[in-house]
Image 1 (cartoon, rainbow, N blue to C red):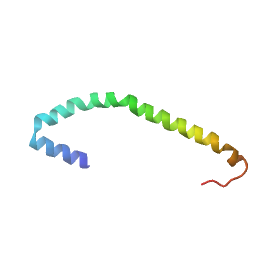
Image 2 (image 1 turned 180 degrees about the horizontal axis):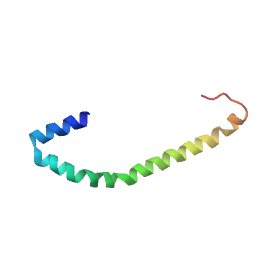
Image 3 (image 1 turned 90 degrees about the horizontal axis):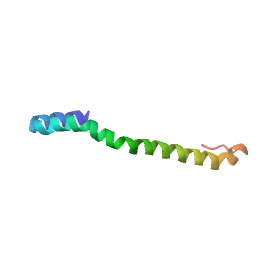
Image 4 (image 1 turned 30 degrees about the vertical axis):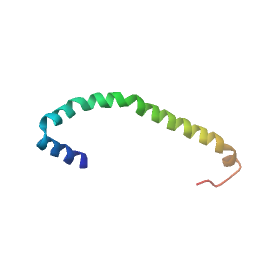
Length: 65
């Protein structure tokens, strides 16, 4: 909601910049997409490593969280 209000304020103050933002936003999203995917992969990798490290404790019956 705050982003929408900020965009409306930008539209009122400087509409050419707001139009440029609308045009360039998809390209910025495409540039950031590989980093998002990398973050998801690394998060899943760390979760797998954590699960493997805590597997012996889970097998021995430690209550965990």
